[in-house]
Length: 257
Figure 1 (cartoon, helix red, strand yellow):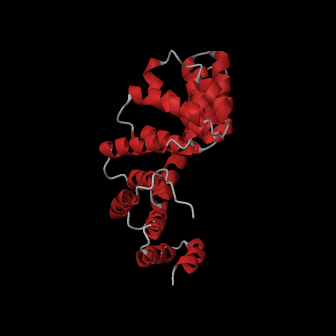
Figure 2: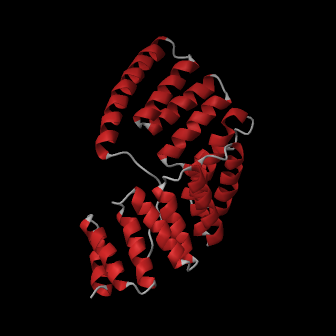
Figure 3: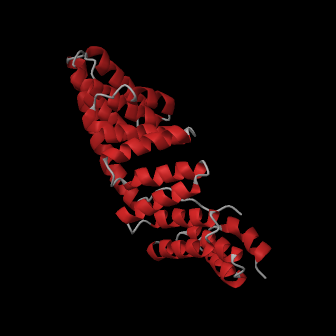
């Protein structure tokens, strides 16, 4: 049985769709207007830059990269590299994004975001050691950034530095004590350290904030199982199944009388 390590929060399906539709309509209008402007002034680097930004927001990352390249050819500058790196990251070219971000050492204003993005790219390509280094650098710029602690904790967990991950999740909770993800992941770290009672308390706190998270319910169930509290384990596992996670049904029949 594997515990569930959570990542980040999200808006509801309805909220995301509504916001996306409004944003898409606006960005399409911007793209059309700058396309007309480029026909009139094909050597205006600003027009390519602004159209690239709109394409990025619209989700056309490949088109955005092409526009940023066009803008850079006319007027080479670090700001364009920054936007191009962001689009490469979204497009899934993580190695290309890292390469571009690493050209931006002199952009002091954006260093926290640049370092965070480099670290996030490295995390995705499983370069956990370097991801930890860059999240650490990012935290020096902004020691209240909860996501840097979350993902650095996740990277440490992957490298089996469980005590290190536990510390990062605890730091996150000090910043945001309403993060059910932080409590869940802290619980997973405590579980791995065989601190089962502490893990149980963490999972309870996570569920108090988000009672419908089936991953945390499953983790709580496994913890009860390790503590030989089979009845409680089965109750939580059954709740997980009721929330729509049918994949847990096999586990239920294995451990529940």
